[in-house]
Each structure stands twice: as structure tokens, then as C-alpha cells.
Amino acid sequence: MTIFKMPQWPRQPHRTFAQLLRTGACAGMLWLPIVLASPAAVAAQTVAAAAVDDDAAAAATQHEMTTPSPSSECAAPADDKTTADEDAPKKPVQRGTASWYGAKLHGRKSASGERFNMHAMTAAHPSLPLHSWVLVRNVGNGKMAILKVNDRGPFHSKRILDVSYSAAKQLGFASKGTARVEVRPLSRSEMSQVKAQIAQGITPAAGNDDCSSSDQ
Image 1 (cartoon, one colour):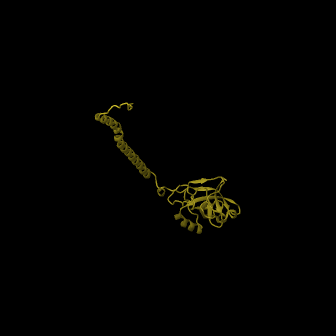
Image 2: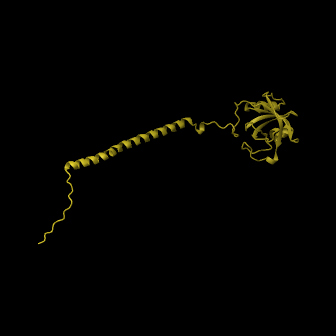
Image 3: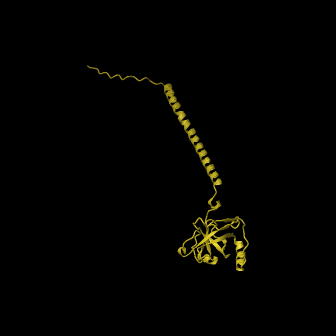
């Protein structure tokens, strides 16, 4: 009778309980720094994020403290639509050549936003504040007129003022086209007195003796 023998499998070394404990302990020690480091890393990231937020909030607060709001900013000095300041220093009297303009520009929008009216007592000046007033005197005949500056011009290097047709008629040079004039800026408080003097035929006293002139 043939006896079959069972195959012999290679024997695995038996691990004692102590060896298993040591293996588990080593594996645990490998994972322990990672587990312990995770809360520390999260805490560090939280602190860093809080510091960044604090810095951003401080920067925003500083920006709000140093940046003026639109309502607190002063209007630009070159704003042509700003009414003349009564407390601003008076500009000197100017002497030079004036011209006039009429029908060709009648009804067109002026630099002040108003429609040019050739029959109104208005003037165009290169730099005087819009909505300010000037006393204009024709040097040749002594005639005077109070005019409102509501436009820019004349665009001619030898002229200091453009007046409306009606103003040119009152000043006595509508038929000539140009005249030698004296231009004196007026404050609103001066206007009533100057108007009364002109109505009585009295020449108003000069406001500022410092004169600037423009040659023809």
C-alpha cells in the first residue's frame, strides 16, 4: 500500500507576543510625530492667518484715516463753473484792446454753461473767474459798462476782452470793432455803488493802482 505524504510548507518563524508589541510600538512611533504635528501646524496656520488679517485691517484703517473723502476735498481752482470768491485778492486793473462778438455766436453755449446772448451785458475773458463782474471803461471816449464774465476769450494774443454786441454799443465801439479799454474786477459789494456812480455820470474811483497792459 502506497502512503502519500503531505507536502511540507516552509515554516514561518513564530512571533512572540513581545515581538508583536515591539513592532506595533515602532509603527506607532513613526506615526506619532505626524499626529502630534498636525494640531501644531493647524494652530500655526491659524495664528499666521490671524496676523495677516490684523495687518490688513490696520492698513485699511490707516488708509481711511489718511485718504480724504470726496466731500472733504477742495474744488479744483481751475473749475470754470465755480463762482468767484468774494474774499479772493483783487486782480489788477488791465489795459488793452477789446473786441466784440454778436450774431454769429448768438445762442451758443458759453464756457459758463449759459447761452451767449448778444443783447446781454456780458464779456469773455481769458482768466478772470466766470460769473464775476468787471467795470469796463473805453479809454478813448470815457464810456463805461458793468459786464458779467460768462465766457472764455478772446483767442487773440493782442486782446484782453471780448464783449457782447450790446456792451460794445454802450462802450461806443460797435461800429469800429475794437477799442482801447480798461478792465477793473468788481466784487458784488462794489457793484451797487459803482452802478449809482455811473448813473450820476461820476467816474468810479480806481480799485487797484497796479495795472497790466497789452499792446495792440
